[in-house]
Structures are given as structure tokens and as C-alpha cells.
Image 1: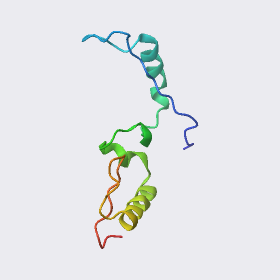
Image 2 (image 1 turned 90 degrees about the horizontal axis):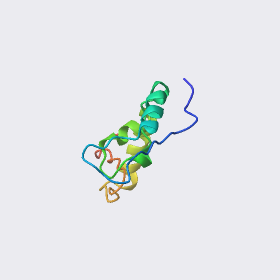
Image 3 (image 1 turned 45 degrees about the vertical axis):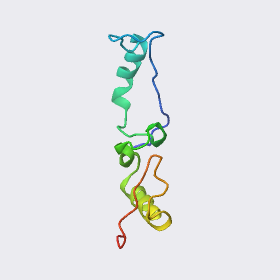
Length: 93
């Protein structure tokens, strides 16, 4: 499978928030039209702090390497206020 060549971010909103507001129709139609081409992946910088989907941003090999690097360089998880990857437990890897 080819790697994605681009990322499309749809931002839609109304100038005045309302309880019954919806995404403007042009943005909704574009998002719907592009859905068949979506990979289902997640871009790590689009996630917020503490988002559980960080694992979805990496393939298994890269994620395992990041976990090992975190274990080696930040075993107490001092740098965790980000899209965190928890270190592997001591003795793992």
C-alpha cells in the first residue's frame, strides 16, 4: 500500500455557536467524499495531552522503539505532559 501523500484537515464552524449547529455543508461534503481514501491513521501532533490514541500514530516497530527509548532516557516518565509514550517497565525489552 502506498504511503499517504498528504493530510487534509477540515475545520468548519459557525461564527456564532448554537446548540443545534452543524459543520458547514461544504466541509461536510468534502470530508464525506474523502473518507474512502482515509488510512484510519492518526497524526500525533493533532492529539491532545493524554490522548489514548498515541499508539495509533505509529506502526508496531516504531512504537516499540519509542517505548524502549523512553525506558532508557526517561524511565520515571518526567516528560509526560505531551502526546506521551509511557516507558517500558524495568527489565522489559
